[in-house]
Length: 264
Image (cartoon, rainbow, N blue to C red; front, side):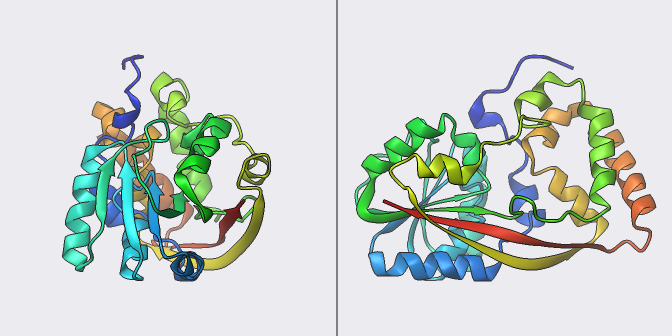
């Protein structure tokens, strides 16, 4: 094990194909709401921290002019392939919250489960204020809203993670057991985008054990690159724990997503 930390653009090394295959999708109702709010603005959507297009591609499928931005080039390549397979066109650019692209006509910025990577938040939101058109908006989407329930079998995942990652400095630096995230609503209220509408969308997913395990490899702190030679043992122990927690082999997760629509 090494204590040398990967640079930000490599945080999700080896996760792109796992994202496309296993990462759970956002509720259609939430994506429809972003589309309804964005279409009248008649401008470009910039999806920051796009990964392989989990938000960007569905919005492009809804007729929006979308640019997907991510610091990891593998994510952009994988997303471009997936978009082509799905018959949808959008633009892909490499960048992060500290290196926003030179763009005009940005009406909506979307961020899906990545706002915590945008620190320092105040500086980032000031930069967005210069980028987004005056009538534009910021849409922050989270698969699991603050306080939303977690299924009992999630405890099995946490237990295995603790065994493998508790003393790993890379895992800690990349989000494992990070301090509680700042309340996003409070952060937005002190920003230029201080008019906030919060929407919640109850939804449920059903996954196989392969899907549950595969999702762990979409996370920075359990990426294949970070686990390295520990990956086979981690995979084996996680499957054992999940089968013990839910012997039927079907993993139901009934929860709710959160969408914050923030305007000036």
